[in-house]
Length: 532
Image (cartoon, rainbow, N blue to C red; front, top):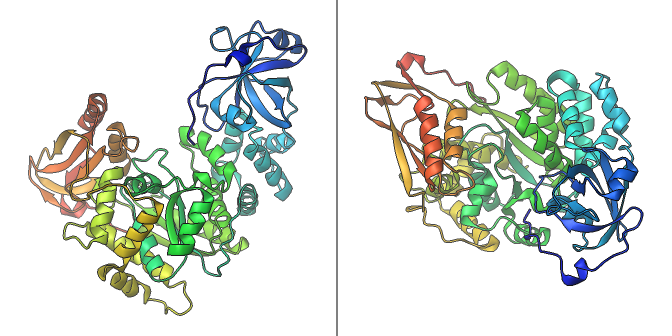
């Protein structure tokens, strides 16, 4: 979401107003509270004293037939908000949709209708369909404070939801917000549960399957804790913030798009929950299933290929854990009438060479161009996933998809489709042979002879983020060694790029403590467990 800078009140706004009773002049407070409505009252405000408001209590703000519920913060600085004013954070101000200085009414807010169901879940009770629909509606309407959201996330963490409750939660999340209908019997999508740096297979799968004629309207997220999301990487090549009307036109003309999903308002409760899940590092199986499948159903997908990587530093660490997650996804998808094909893939190390938007875009374009320098692991994984999607078509026999996908890629048809999508979304000037990477850099080299026996996904992702990715598109890590490679002391393991000296310093300090690589004997390379 883009915010316009706060503007000072106009002379008309500063004129005296009738602020008797519960009426206050609105003031825009230029604070991004990320998916939470926050209101600000001065401690000496007569309304604050008369109504018995307390910090972190919830108030209802009304104006022009609109109303919002906001969490109250109390301030002592009149330069933030005066005694006759009500301040609103950026999110809250935009939702109320009135001008600064407008007179609003303020009152104590009623507790959310679903608060009783939340308390029962906190107490460990099993909830029904109506309970979850009520909770999710209140979450989407921003009626819950961050404290209440955190309580819900913790109460539904790990084994606190049975599989039917996960279905109820997913169904409720898909029902809130916009639901797309592409008027096509076969609408495909591919999704990875995440956790593997450089895993930009979607940017290859989409043009391949679209070139085959399948509809694949890909709406992707931006990175939250990773060095790049699909939307961040695609934004290097083209605009990704498209209106729904633009998105629909592009999909109609090219059978696909690669856009940021924030403009489509799909499963908005999920976006609110993510705001508290990520800082807590909570990503329980039930919440993961509800988050992914609710957005796919809301986006109008009929067939989904789901990638679950396994590895020592991936989200899923073992085959039994992957199989449990697979069964949960399959149960919920079946109840939602979504055709699901789960593939378990190699998550022992990053995919490709680049970690960060520019570097990952470089890898993608090299694969599409059939460049000799293209990372083969990224190419092969994308072909296998694209092949599974192509096999969703009733005219394609099982097992034939990979060869069809490979022919589309080798012939240049996938590149042509990708270039058409880029042009339709608004192409940007990007030379993948000479990407404008951060001018500051340092190299990490092997300290001893040996074989690369482990690459810690979490650590290299952290170093790339400290270097500035994804906020700085040219920041990140360029890998030169992968699992099983033999190195001698002094060989280059990876190069870190940054645009700011402070970012470079943070990344250097972290890599000096642990660079993410482990060297040892060839026999110590972990085995791979995949199901393609």
